[in-house]
Image (cartoon, rainbow, N blue to C red; front, side):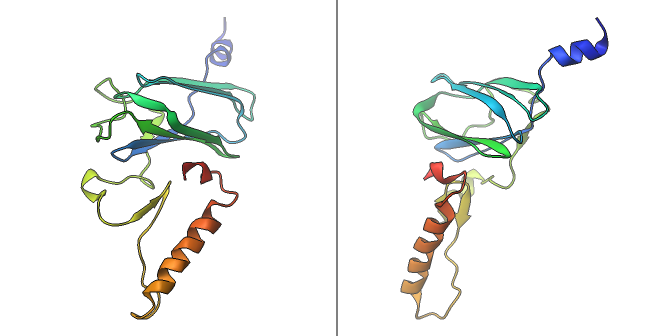
Length: 169
């Protein structure tokens, strides 16, 4: 068997980013135009992913998450460029790492700095809208606080329409 045949038999691992809050974990699998996507999450924290890429090669991985999860309240969505999974933790607490096993994580697993929030920053008063956070911004004068709240409602409604992340609401 040649090395090229071995490579074709082996599956590849797509870049997977993660971030957390005390009650949930965000997983974003970067695999544009994925086909035959299979996601399996078990209550003990076992997560399995497999799909075919636009190149018709197989991509898959298995993760043993740090702790138990609530499968019924976890949600997934397949978008054109990514597969997103919002995993609800069984117990609301910060995990010291994503995986149960200590040590260096797999090379395809990366921190999602765009979604990352430190444990100390969780209660700073921002509204969390799935992956997007909006803090109350005073764009007008001091006398139009009611207008700001109305504007925030409009932003939420327009942000959720037709986006791949609307399932997080």
